[in-house]
Image (cartoon, helix red, strand yellow):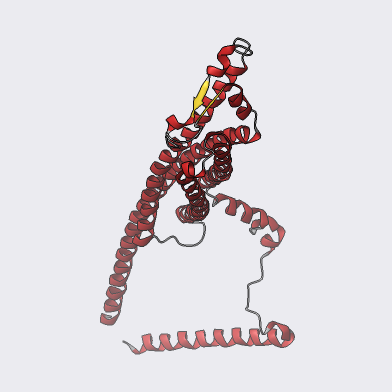
Length: 326
C-alpha cells in the first residue's frame, strides 16, 4: 500500500478509538450519577413515538391471542370425546357386569359351580376395564401433547422451527398405533352390543307378558326365556329357564333395570371412543404430512442459506484480492 493509504487507515483507527473512549466516558458518568444502574444492562431509551403509542408493544392481549393460536382445537375435541367415551364404557360396563352376575346367581343359575367360569371371566373383564381406563387416560394426554407440539411447530409460534427424523418417526408411530387401537375398539363396540341384545330380548319378552292380550291368560306361563341358549352358562345349569310371572318379576327388579340401561350407555361410550380414535387418526395423518412438508422446506432453506454464505465468502475474498493489488 501507499503511504497516503496507510496514513488514512491510521486516522480511521484513531477516530474509532476516540469514539469508543468517549462512549465509555458517557457510560461511566451515567453510572456515577445513578449508582443503582451498574447491575442493570443498558437498554436504549424509547423514542417519543414509542411513548406516545403504548399499544405498539405486545401486551397481555396479544400474548393470549398468540397462545390461543397454538391450541390444537381438533386434538382437544378428540381428547374430550375419547375421555368421555372411555369413562362411560369403563364405568357403566363395570357396574353392569356386577349386576349381571347378581341376576344369574339369583334367578338363572342357583348352583355356584355352574357359573364359576363365567364369574371368573367377568372378574377378569373388570380388571381389564381398569387397565383400559388407565391406558387411554395416558394415551389421550400424549396425543394432545403431540397436537400442541405439531401445531406450535408448524405455525412457528415458539422460536425457530426445526424438525428431525426422530420426530417424524414418532408421529408415524402414533398414526399406526391409533389405527390399530381404532380397529380393536371396533371389536369392543361390537362385543358390547351382545349384552344389550340379550337384555333387550328379555325386556321385550316381559313386555309381551305385561300386554293386555296375554296378561291373566293361561298362555302367560308358556312365555319363557332360556338364558342357556346364549352360551354364557352350561346347558346343565338349573333352572336356566324362567317363564311367566317369575320372568316378569325379574324384569321389575332394580338389578335388571340398571344393568340393561348401563349396558346401553357402555355401548354408546364404545361408539364414541371409536369416533374419537377416527378423529385422532385424521389429525395425526394431517400433522405427519405437515411435518414432512416442513422438513423439506427446512432442508431447502438450509441449502439456500449455505449457497448465499458461500457466495458472500467468494465476493469478500475477491474484494480482498483486488485491494491487495491496488
